[in-house]
Image (tube, rainbow, N blue to C red):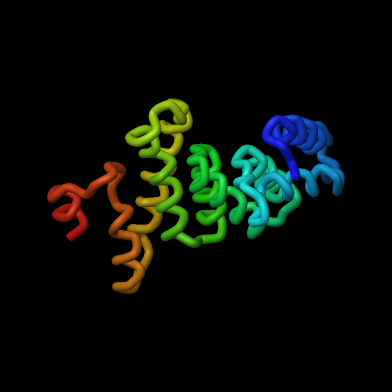
Length: 171
């Protein structure tokens, strides 16, 4: 079992091993440590380590394993919440033209400050808002089914709750 203080030391070591690679793949040991921390343990009281999930997602993205990257960005984003992880999950979904989760995650990153102001970076929030607008504009050019339109509608505004004006603008 990993003790609380050990988790941070293991994380720092694995992060260093992943980040200082000059383009080379990270060592298996680093990925193993990150997985152990990121996945948590159902047999102990240790919960998943959000920072490890983010670093692991970044490593998988850099290795070209986008589905694994999305999975860990989503876990970190939802578990933290972690603003950059939410944005990156949305960005990768957009790269793969999965527009509903793309706009949902980017929107969540952009409005995170409403519920967790201590966890946001203002520059990141501004970039999120711009990404939201860009994806929204792109989506309006598609011929969407009624189901797709309905799925996207609930993410159509940057406020945490839709206003009557938002509803009128979508009609």
